[in-house]
Length: 89
Image (cartoon, rainbow, N blue to C red):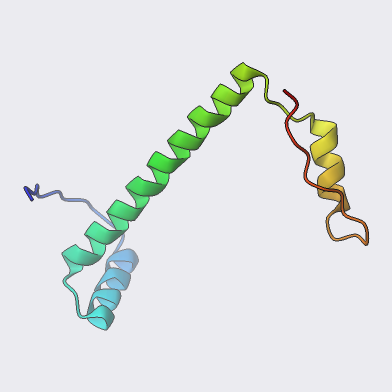
């Protein structure tokens, strides 16, 4: 796999935490940073996918009225919670 060197200025306390974890895991600092960056990118990509899915639902009219979501949320933790609301088509 081709690689590219990247640099970043990070606060000292964060750098020390990275060094601590690298020592605990017996891995190089770069491995820790690569893992963290890969995880962050994956989360952001999934967030974008979910946003696009939500926008498609809105355009298709698959919506749940706020009042139904609020009633459901308020019922949680009670003796008779409501079933989760479903989008109307």
